[in-house]
Length: 486
Ligand code: NAD
Image (cartoon, rainbow, N blue to C red; front, top):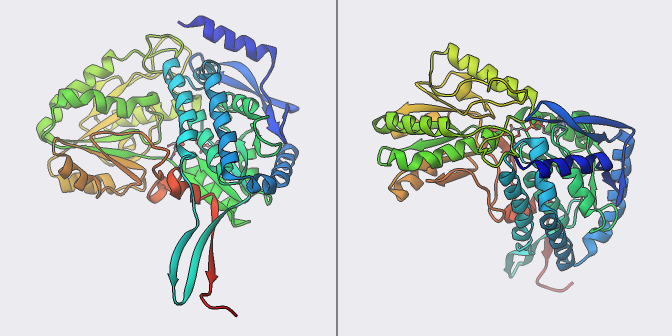
């Protein structure tokens, strides 16, 4: 175990608790809450809990700061964000250790998350939103101009604390907005630490980071001083956010849950693709919105593929993310651990075949579940119909591709999907018929900061990333300019 990394991180938290950032200052709160290490089930640190008054102060500071920030040239805003990317990379070991402590993922994956967060800033700030001319003829010229919305309230989940919060900062600040960001109460410390590192890189009030419980998220969604909500989390909470935001008709972007299908055609080599499919399903212990959550496999290769996946699952090392040999960490929190166990019980009752795993790891206190491959299962079970958000993959048999597509699409989810075949063109044509925001061929999982990402159906509303994502942080205004003088 990389004990020294963990010990140093814990010692630093004892010396000085992490703070909120409000109006450019590092501040604590009267109330604080435990943060639990999912690998032990025990608290390892405390997190300040922002009061409604502190939220009001942050929003007021943000409103004061926004006009001057928006008036800065784009290149200056980009430079400030590049300094944030540099600060993130300069503190990669510390941020990665915090992520592993509070979220559980293996340390090398936490390092990758930190590096990716920094690279997303650079990729996003290569894009430019320019005034568009929609018409220029004898009737005159019509321009579409884009201006910032004002104050963005950003709310994030616990599965990828930095990869999900840093792009929201980048979208908002690059487009001339300012931000009030709230991480998940389950994994708040890496995001708060990010705020501390960034607090003097921007003018006071431009970047505010406040930790708090679900009620603080509701206050942000309702707040009359906030103009737009960028939310990433579950479908159930997304609906509440939309309802809360309705009172002030805020702009709302929702990045919500997924139940992605991967469809594997009969012409692939099961041994060759099994590791890729396994990685696409079990990344971050299955706790990724766009992970493979339903695997549809043609009957001709069903048994060999199930067998290969089972062997990989049994050989996968599960444990504390600070152990360098560990490939899969724990489920992040007790509530999610219980949801996954309930789904496993339901799967057993349904009579499905457990090819690998099926139980929590015995003997430890942490929230560990064996990587689980389930065969001979179909729709109508919780494992197939819901988003388990844990290390459990149902493998579903099909014989007809159109039937597989229609079953893949028969869901309220619509985040991503993939098709796997030696014939890339055929696979691409099938993938384009998935009712999803993103489709991949011979690959699954991965957002590109320059390509719009978001959910179809109940997996979301709007897009983040790419020019479409940046425009969601801006008001589009049509300006009519006549061709003749008065
Ligand atoms: P969650 O919805 O429980 O919580 C997300 C955030 O919302 C937290 O910060 C929470 O404090 C806050 N919140 C809770 N109640 C609120 C309310 N009434 N008003 C405003 N904010 C409130 O989600 P989670 O369990 O943290 O995350 C897992 C879910 O997130 C999964 O469904 C996963 O698929 C989804 N997710 C989606 C994406 C995506 O890009 N589409 C990415 C990552 C995770």
